[in-house]
Image 1: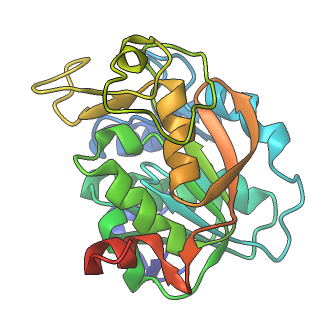
Image 2: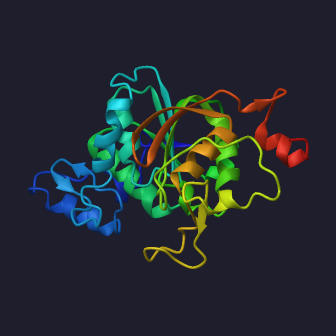
Length: 268
């Protein structure tokens, strides 16, 4: 696993600031299109983002729900992109922050941003489906804006649970009903009316593309999000904004085994 405190190649070394930021802007441009708008010493990386000042606008809505002092805490940032959340959590004093992503461009951007800001975070190319290879658990696992990009989302969530030692901060795109109800434990086979309820847990499958993005696969309504979180053994502690939930594992183990492992061996 690499850390931005390790020696970086020449492309990712911090630029000089003696030219009024011109070199910095050029290096930002060379690293390709940015999805995270980071403030690198007054220079924005994505000033014309279609969502505005993203993800800072999302962070402002959830920041109050995360301790301001994370001294001693460990953090795993899944789908870290250009490192916005990893950097913010390190600024709050987290002892160790690990950011993972599958996109080399985003990882290069994150390494560059962390180097420019002098922030020591670890960055690794790793899929959420492979988080088992990262040793140990984490006090906080951030799973922001990844769920709906996955072809196998519940499988990924059940695997990720194994890394959650404290809390999971979960964010996903939500469409359909924003209402959430608790449903009966069982229904007779003849009851088809529940599936006509707009707030019944549902995932919308995107066959081809949504918002010009072919990686948008499954988009849940709110009831589906909360039902899946509970199904994976999580208890919802907070819902600071419409797309984000803060949870803690309370029943991820069944008879001493993780839900995923029991499912894969056919004993769930």
